[in-house]
Length: 557
Image (cartoon, rainbow, N blue to C red):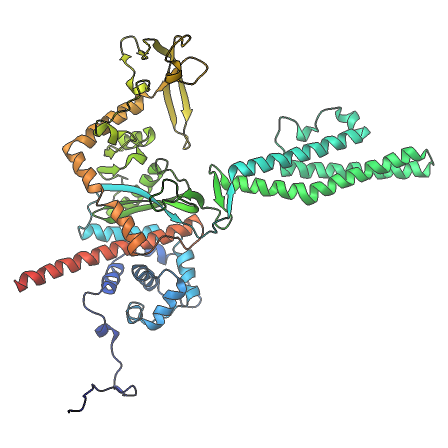
């Protein structure tokens, strides 16, 4: 039996020269693509954030390379990245053997990139255009929700805040009125009315209450003087006792206002300011809003602190991204498109802001405001509305009482209900949306619903039947339906299924990126920018590898 033979193994073998890391990196490795693309990017906006003088800093181009490559490798923690720089050959090569610690990495990511990450992304987009990977002609937009770095039960609800604030304001009013009643001198000055600065028509604020506390101090001093005068003049004990009781009540009220009610009122005023137009926010990350996440196909998922991230793609390359604090996609489209204009200007070096010629979106964006914006931008808006799919399949609303099914006489400008009663034009009403956009509706009202046998099936109002008609939205929907049902529109509808949704799937499933790790909207924008750059570079590398493998197969055959 022959003896086993092993390759040489000697951990203490000396070498004349150390091995070059360049020789250890495969020729078509992803890290080379990241390195090459970022070398070709313009990062002047990032370099300009560094001040002259002082100690030397790690080069921002190296730091960008390390961060983007880390996001391609599903490493999002600064500690994990710092560890990889010490142990991983690919990280050692792309960093030039630099070893910034986790604090330096985190500071660079959360501070240096805060104001310029969009410019860095635009520079990468410019390279993609030069490589003819994107033309910025077709744009497919959709939204998804990413969890914020916030505790699950850290919510502050607007309705709860308003209710609690009202309770505190009520208690304050009661205390002030009580002081007015006990203080005879105050009654002579103000009578039975509220104090001027706390009038019934004005809102009680912490500033007004502080002014009232100062007044209580003056009243308290006068009350003490009055008590001392009564004691020195040796008047009746009852008068002295009554004066002391008044002083104690005023003093007690002042303490209650200063120690309990004013801090609570300040707390609710701060919450109100943070909330703004939102219905909720998280105490851990006040810029995040509680939204429902899709959960295993269930209709209503869990409420979590989130950011609504809007993304647009072309050929599955991310062209633009934006973060929003409201859950509805329809209210985010215009601000997203405005950011897209800026990115396109940076990438195409154009002087005039323009949108891609063809924009495709689902029914969540089919609002009058969005249709009008896209029409003014002179683009082809392949944007669905909420009833498009039903109409396409021929499944119209079967309810004969629905306003869309009522016969309309254009000459007389009136509708007819199933009971052959006329709904005539009454007035025009204007309302504003959450974004401040004015919506105009024509109101039609039935002449009389009295003694109508179909009334219970028709409507539940105690008055006559009224319907609201938005003529402008109807025209926009008609135009959108024509575009969507055209041959080109059918192509875009099919293509949309393979554009933006797979991109979200790649980020959330393949990259395992479902939760933003930095707090605050600006910092969260940094993370989305980095994951978007990582996605684009992986996509580019994947296409290069596919072309290379196809050539190998062709040569082999």
